[in-house]
Amino acid sequence: MPRRNRVTPFGDIVAVPQRGLVFGNRGVLHDDTGELRRSWQVRRWLLCLPEFRGRRRPLAEPGRYTALFFLDEATGLAAGHRPCFECRRAAFGAFRDAWAAGTASVEPPTASGIDDRLHAERIGPGGKRTSTADLGELPDGVFVTGGAAGGRACLLWRGRLLVWSPGGYGERLPAERQVVSVLTPPSTVAALRAGYVPEMHPSAEGR
Image 1 (cartoon, rainbow, N blue to C red):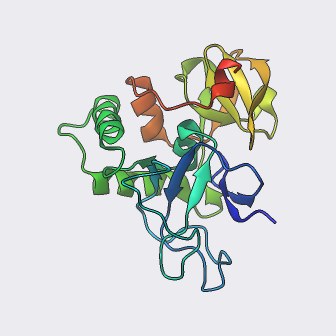
Image 2 (cartoon, helix red, strand yellow):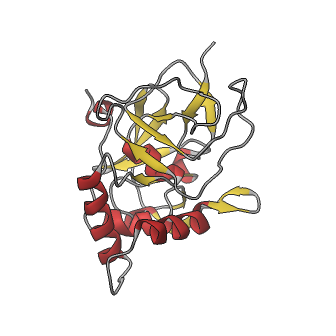
């Protein structure tokens, strides 16, 4: 049986065989038996390298953070995560600078400042927060649902809506002007609009 450690663009943690390209965490989510007991513990939701300096440990070691996996970085950004400062320092720097430009910050934000704002934008009383926008006003790399997508999560990429699945992007829908629900947090949308380019699964390019 696959572990429940795969994250969807909606931020849900599910059990599927596919692992994805990006690794991350939200703190300690599992108990001593390895079963998930909560969906997050800390406000620092990271997107990390799958391997860094040879570090290896069990996926659900008691008392240590729960290893999570994402199809790609765009999926993790939609779920409310951000690049790790330690193992993805260049990506974090690019994200921070785009965040500052997109949100008109006077000074470059700190990692903790980004975490606090993301937390307010991703978690609401009923679960994941979303916003509403016209699809034609959104940048590439954003995840949306609703409209032509129905209840599915779709990536806006190069003039198309790419339907997400655990194994990659499949059906392509036309990105016609329509009102949609935006899964990616507003400040991350602003960073994408300001030029941050997330790492994409090869299937986004049809490979």
